[in-house]
Amino acid sequence: MFQNRAEAYALALPAAIFAAIVFLIPVGLLLSEGFRSAQGWTLSAFVDFFSQPLNQKVFLRTLKLGVMVTAAAAVIGYATAYAIVSLPPGAKGRMIGLVVLPLMISPVARTYAWIVILGRTGIVNQALMLVGLTDEPVRFLFTETAVFIGLLQLFLPLMIISLISALENLPKDAVPAARILGANWFQVFWKIILPLTREGLIVGGTLVFTGSLTAYITPAILGGSKVLMLETLLYQQVTVANNFVAASVIAFLLIVMSFSANILLRRIATARNRK
Amino acid sequence: MMQKILAPLTLALVMLFLIGPFAIIVAASFSAGDTLAFPPQGFSLKWIAKVFTVESFRQSFAMSLFLAIGGTIAALILGIPASYAMARYRLPGAETVRFMVSLPIIVPGIIVGLALLRYFVIPIGLSITLALFLAHTALILPYAVRVVSASLANLRSDMEEAAVLLGASRLGAFFSVVLPNIRGGILSAFILGFVTSFNQVPVSLFLSGPGVRTLPIDMLGYMEIVFDPSVAALSSLLAFLSIGIVFLAERFLGFSRYV
Image (cartoon, rainbow over the protein chains, first blue to last red):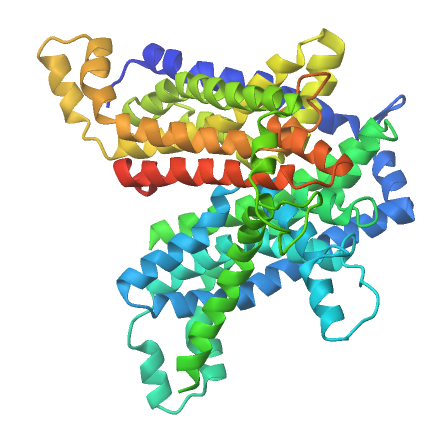
């Protein structure tokens, strides 16, 4: 440990000052716009924002999709992570590689693929018409279902990876022991796997939930203006309505949700370090 | 018994869901047809070739490359000394500094872009290129600090203390002892920063102007107007570029140790 305080500040302050000027001050100013009016500080922008049915709908839809994507990712994530952890080491490594691979690919490319799959002449519609389930193409694009599928595909890897590391710390004999003692799979999951991997589930869940809430590309491409979420609404408020006050309200909502999730994650991390 | 069938089936379905769309994009980019479709109509390289002839793609690719390389270098120039100070000095307020530089990860990028547009670009007349550069640097800074801090934590501090005791200046010890020992971490930070910046969309959404936009933003705009496979071709090229870089990094640097 070096003691020279002046040196330490000279090294650390440029980064901190940069973050303050480029980031902290402009973002703080933007957020404050939602609370200011000609008369002084006020919450009226928030009241106005939530008094409009469209905004209410978008806010609730964003929360709903966040919860649904997180729940689906948790169910699929547990099944996948359990199957991967049970594999022999070599195959396990390759599977983890395949799970991580999509994270390296641009989200624009990953979302764009769904247009080919779900579009009017896409594979799903071709298959449905081939087996005669429908005579006309079914509309999938620009529906909540399409956004749900896109978000799930985007964020599922984060859940699987969090659950893999949690499941690897599960004592090896716990599940077979419970099975021998007569527990069924449902009991094994609720009484053994879930309590012992809770941390991994919360970490993965937080990543998926905040990722879905603050996603822009997926709702923009697969939802369009029919299925707005908070970020696409923010973009519209600025570019179409030129309404910076509403944009600032949405920014505040997004930051509050993102921060709460982050604090939760940090709590869990410090609780784990103490053990 | 059930598990013998269920586990591989689950894995196969999930992998199909995760990797399948990417495979389809790759297949569609070799199509000979004029619209985006799967299965592709015939085989040709014309869409792959077309990507290189679209002027706006060339411009925005150069812009994205400049931001990813320049932004990462700037983030490292700011981040390495800060990480070093937090790792090796008794620094009151170290937690505040760490919190401040890691903020850009927590705050959604779209808000950062909008804030810069509203308070720097519009009133002060800051150029959009410079605003993009600052925003991407801020975005990469948390990754740079995290990765460099991790590799500093793995490096014993008595080495540079010994170098100083033996007469090296503090700065000389840093450049001759510390820097060579954390170069793997710095390279990993560089790659992580590059990929993060290159694939980044939300932060750049509001920061675009005539002839000034990043590649992913350009692709978003292009696919709204044109429905041919060229965006698919470009997407596959970029994906293979990212995967290639990360694969080489993992192979030669053990990249995942730092990330």
